Image 1 (cartoon, rainbow, N blue to C red):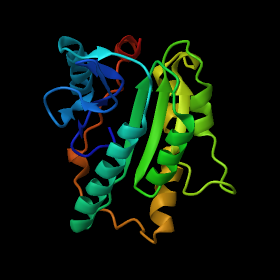
Image 2: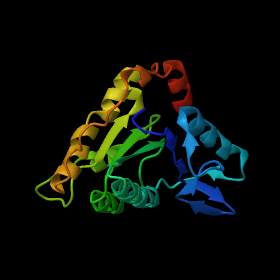
Image 3: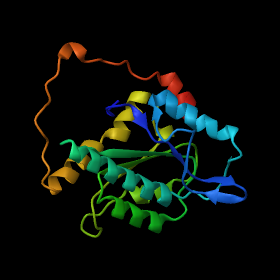
Image 4: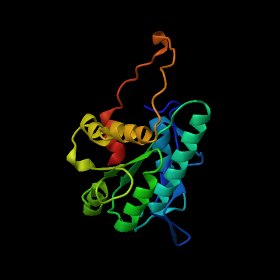
Length: 210
């Protein structure tokens, strides 16, 4: 709901096609889809293709693709005198295989206007994810852009949302402040045109995530 046009790219990872595992591929036929329903339709559409889910669980290509996307979006917004910040949401049922390599990609990505939220779904051992979430500013380069949450630890959509989003504001401010980019003045708007949308249905959310 924080996206101005409510259009999102949806990428998948860990799927096999012609006996080759692909670690970043577009879900659905459109480069961007509209709203939560569009995301769900794109995800479900994968299972109507020859792609089959497969291990290992690797994030590096998705992180790299997201970094390029975030930088492009910020450059495009800057030309219009605006700002853009991207959030990569990763939903995974498996623990990451290449922890050290993934950590390095996250540090590289921290140079771009990007935050990464990883939601672990199911009962897998997510120890590697927790390692990615840990950030030691005194020993690591870049900034902290990663948050891991375990889906099974939350019993309501509200609690899950709070956990997923709680570090995003600080990460966003840090990125722009460190570059001397301050918020612009507010745009004029008619409060009668402001639309307050209802919360997403919790049953639908939990059904989608399993």
